Image (cartoon, rainbow, N blue to C red; front, top):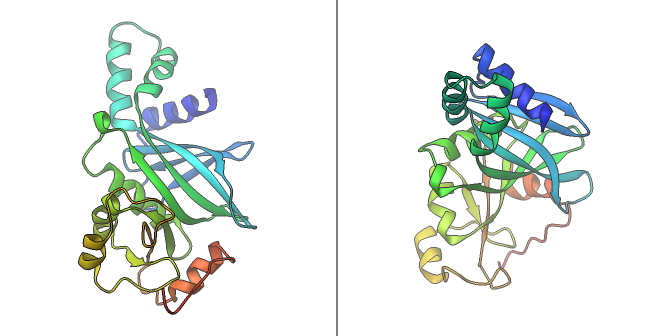
Amino acid sequence: MRQWIKLVENVLIDETKGVGVLRREAQGMGLEVMYGEGFALVGGFRSGGASPGMVRVQYSIIDLDIMQELVSALVADGMEKSEAQRRSQEKSNVGTVDIYKDADNAIRAIIDIKLNAKNRKAGLGRAVIQSLVASAPQDVVIFDIRKPAVGFWKKMGAEFYKRGGAPVTDLKTHLVSTPKRSSMSAPHAYLQGVIRKPGSTTPFEETLRAVDPNAVFSVSS
C-alpha cells in the first residue's frame, strides 16, 4: 500500500495525468500503477485462472479528483500530507477492473469492470475502458457480457458474439429472448465481444484464440 500512496502522491504534486494511453509505472512483484485522465489503476493482483501465456489480474480504480479533494481538506485541517494521502486512498477507491495480460505485460482482454454506485462519476467507466483499449497493442476481447451490461459495451463500440463465435446480427432480438438473471450455463446467458483498434479488420476468431487458444467455435452457434 505504501508504494501506491507514494505514486499517487507524485501525481498530485506534479499534476501529471495520462491522456489516452495509460502511463504505466512498475512497482515490483508484478504490481503496477497505470495513470489515466483523472484516475489511476492500482495493483495487478492475480484474480483467477487464465490460458497459458496469459494472466488474469485485478486493479483498484482510484479517482484522483476525489483523492485530491480529500487530501486538500485534510491538509487544510493541519494533517501531514503523507498521512492525508494514506487516509484518502481507501475513500478514493471507486471500483475494480479485471483484465488479461500476456507474457509481455500487454493488455489483451477485459473481463469485468465494477464501479461503486455511491462513488460513481459520470464517464469514469468509459474513460477507464477507452484508456485500456488505447494502451493495448491490438483489438481487445471483452468476456462475459451479461444482459444488463450490453448497453454500456454497445456505447463503447463493442461488436458482440455468441458463445461459439457467431456474430449477434440482431442485438434487440437477442436481448428480448435472454432472461435478465439467466444462469451462466444457460444458452446465450452471456456474450463475448471485441473493441477494435482503428482500422483493424482482424477476424474475431483470430483475436479470441490469441487470448484463449482453447476457445470453441461452431458454425451453428
